[in-house]
Image (tube, rainbow, N blue to C red):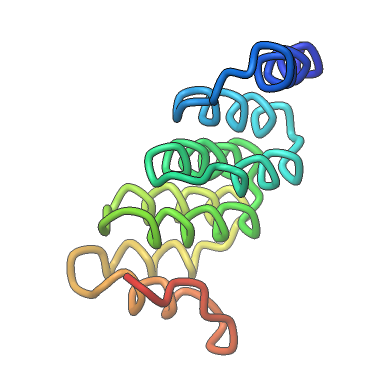
Length: 138
């Protein structure tokens, strides 16, 4: 089913010459992510050029990281969301849910205890190892 969706998207681009909208990126990235094809989903999200499409794609990937309990993917997606749109605690909550799914409860507690108290950069940098800085703009 996923491969069929990819074929339709490719045909839409090449044969029909339709410019994909935000929904197209979001649906396709979400489909790939839910199927566990996170690397493909990440690569597709990177192709989304305007903020609306990118936001839709990265949000779908963040959700896919949550479904698959893959914090490395969820962290990248949350960082991209932070770059694109204004701060939103929902990114932090979803990322903390990913950490919980991986049994990283200390990170969950750090994130959730700081929601509303700090900027996104400070909030998420406190949850990660000090030598890894994902969220720099928010």
